[in-house]
Length: 119
Image 1 (cartoon, rainbow, N blue to C red):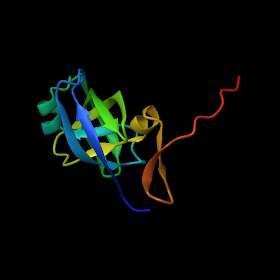
Image 2: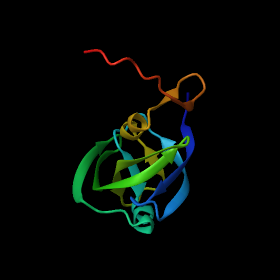
Image 3: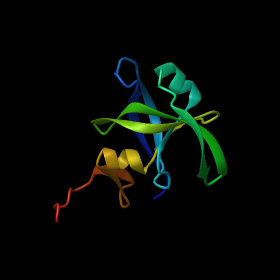
Image 4: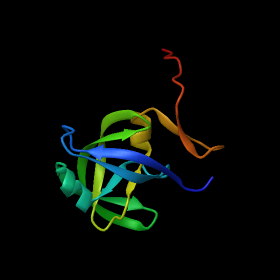
């Protein structure tokens, strides 16, 4: 299938500052990650520092949150702010929150069908 890139809008929690970005959908990542420079431009809150395991080893990040819009769907989601990152990476938490999945045939994001709630 290859890489899946999408046009996204990412912004401050109140939506007063929004940037259009090209983002890489990373289905192997749990959270969405943003470069520190972008987080600073948007005025994202910085909650606490932590360490995450990535395919390239451990990375230190700052936990934050941002408004994100993909395929016309918009929500506030948790994000990891990472120094030295050069792109926005959209992880599974954001995809689930927006009810999106990657179609393996087309390599595009599509709305996920909601199943029936059984209890």
